[in-house]
Image (tube, rainbow, N blue to C red; front, side, top):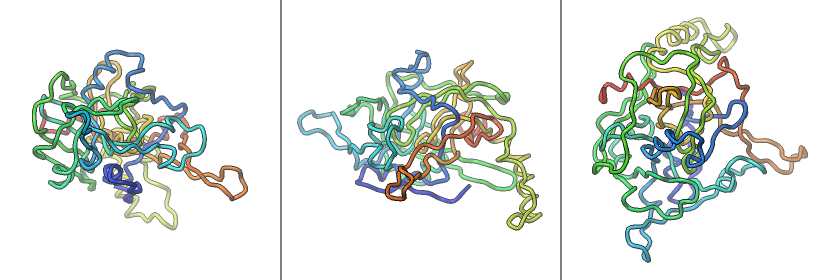
Length: 322
């Protein structure tokens, strides 16, 4: 995988965001199609969002002494923490989550391996459901611990790509339906997709208007030049052939924090894969062009499958849940 990038740690709540290494960053293609989950137009996906959780460090959650069983959380505003330029999407919302994950049975959650790598991650992070825009307090019934890591596989070799984890929660999850997922076969190129999760740690978002890409310029061997020798070209060429068994690319509007979240087939509603990697989230710009003030804005890519960077690990390769 690419070079590791960590978000700045500001307060204990942002330790969850810093937990997610790069290049697990995502991006926007064409128009930004993210919407707050409860405002999405298709009620079936709003219902599926109930089975998607966000990962947060336990120290970021504090029981409200006035309301036992209700938890406060550290509130950091996106525009301030990310030094955003004016008029960026969701700039006044809070950042909390580091990764996303989703239920596949009443006590089993799937996410990305880089989100849950070891026992430390299992013990120190919580999984929170129903974190929507406007949530000020989180009921204890929506907060779950990781009881056991069933598997956490992170590999990017010549012949294989893996980035997924399966964990057991400390108790069965009630009033939520585990998500249906593909068990055999492969989603075909061009299939419309939907993603649900917590981009940049924000309250739950749903984004659509994306499709499965067969091959992109990201996966083709680069022309030979001073920095790419024949051996590295050969390795990249072999990877471009073998990795399609494990992943597919798409033009999903996803960000850091979406990692581990479910990518759905919009037509069938089943989970096709786990979001694991993508392009840059933000770029630094000179706000007034005079070198006096710099800020960050969302990276906008051309809405083309040829340039799609978002990498989705196929759910059929998560053998532990099949």
